[in-house]
Image (cartoon, rainbow, N blue to C red; front, side, top):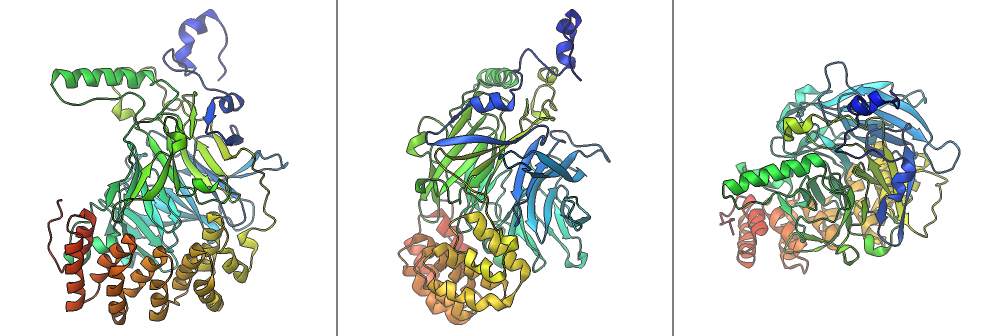
Length: 597
């Protein structure tokens, strides 16, 4: 409804139009572009905005380059039965000017949809309490098949429900569950039983109809690096590492699966925002701090300049950014209206260390003066640019956490008719639309694509090879594992061989002897089903790479006999002061050590 300019409107109309004297009004897309301060050497471009998209929270490109966006119009309130508003749109650029100017509603009336992932010509969709499979079969970009794949997930907090589906190099699809309770069943085959995901995340393989808990309690952001290592995002914790896989923590009757995660950021909680704290947060902070002081509590409440709304952590695996931006994780801060970048380096033992790069010691990779800018999620595009999903709302906060009197002039749906998607790329970069996408390639061409410098291309090629299940390419994959100069290609080849059921003791042994430590780690994992490889596992306890030795500590617990127990005892002596080595060693059930140091 358009507001009329009159004395009555001036006196009484502000709140009816959704405005408030306490909160600024939105910017147009063109004005918003001018509000950004991006790191020197980069530029940001608008590729979609309202009315083509509204309330976007996720974007994905399928194997044909088709673009799908999840719109979460339900946020932040749970929709009434039969009135769900979330939806998925198919978008395209019809005139070649770089803007997504046409859309088709692929699926509407979804309940709090948050995440999509391409699979077998359709889309897997998180829509708590379910994970759905939707597919267009007649080519009109509208869903014709709607099937519930998994059900039973927690569905009472839109900021902490099943989300962030990611296909990993290990052929499992991982989802963020934030540790919330749920009894999950695979709906197509209920006879497979139910599993509990309380205290964990979730992972599954549709090619083998497997599903199980996954270590971690990531919230709205799950970054996976080139080697399959998972990292999480959770409100004030902008970056944590999932250190030990769930299967190790629960073996031998252990119940230590709730502590597999470690915060790894080195620079504290400080951020450099360009927007002031919103009125409600500043007022709430003043009240809380007054109460803390009156109760003599040694506690400080921050209204701004500290992480409180981290979202969408994404590992940059593209081929377009300068080399120093590899090993980077980008995280949105929806409360601070900025994008933070962490650089990963090797830390102590199995841990990574995350810190601000020198270019951002006193600034952020991108920050906006527009308080409506809500960078909720990211995607690395086929051309290597970083896509930014901007939900663009006046308020991003759970209403339950705000005092009632402060909510009187807050419209939590203000902006549900707006939304933007940007792309960030180097200042002088020139990109081109691919002439051929993975979905148009033969299986042989997909194998070759595993050597592509761009992560989107490699993972998409591997996923399609898993889906097609063509064992005729096994010999080519084994040659790639043996001869490719690219460690990442060798890793993709190894796991594609696994998906095609081509793993053997000799393949595992070859991986254990690979020049790259991350492939030796995967070889160790495959060795766990071959008792004859125990002597080779024990030899790798002397590996120069600590991460490999850490995997030895985990893998040895899968072997029986005195020699594995003795090797674990030696590792326990060498790493007696390392918490995570202690957890790895004791998870095998052979030793009982003090893990509190």
